[in-house]
Image (cartoon, rainbow over all chains, first blue to last red; front, side, top):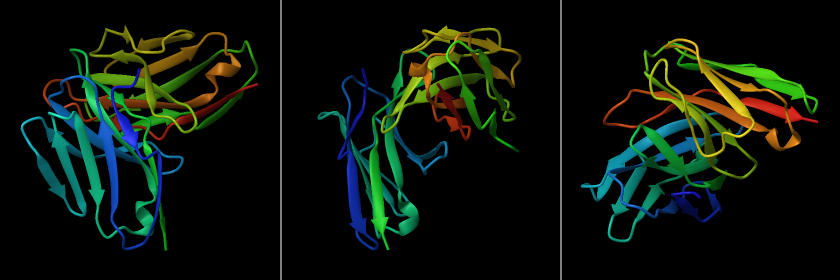
Length: 111
Length: 113
């Protein structure tokens, strides 16, 4: 079963609007990561937030983590058509360096 | 640096045929992974190799075998392909310990008829 579940599954917005995606997970974690996947390509790491952090910024990205609710959100501000992609959250799995990925949010930004 | 490379990019097989998907990384990473991604879904871990000389099963290992040839290369083999193995396969690697950020290859699209 998937550790992380993204919501919504799909999101369509106009260029310039903000996009918010949510991720819920089931077990305690020490960090949570967000990845982007452009159509037909591999995943690219966007940002990692540790369990002792509540919010983190990277450019137009803002990630929050609420460990009490076992949830995270990814906010993309002032979206661009180039932000059109699928976004996945990932959480550590097991004792090694493995990750468990959610099902993803497909974001479409219309010009 | 090429990062993580995968070959082939696309392959069509008939049911029962075998093939090997190749993956190589030039980042001196110890850990490597094979995932499959089915349409509209996230990634599921097939096998991983925490370090050279070791391999372990992931969530969906049935029908697959792997070989960690050396530190750079990690191959995935389908001995007898089935239509259920039609998917996009991604290889990834990372540095062990601490941060689990993974670096992904471009993927191999496999169609089994």
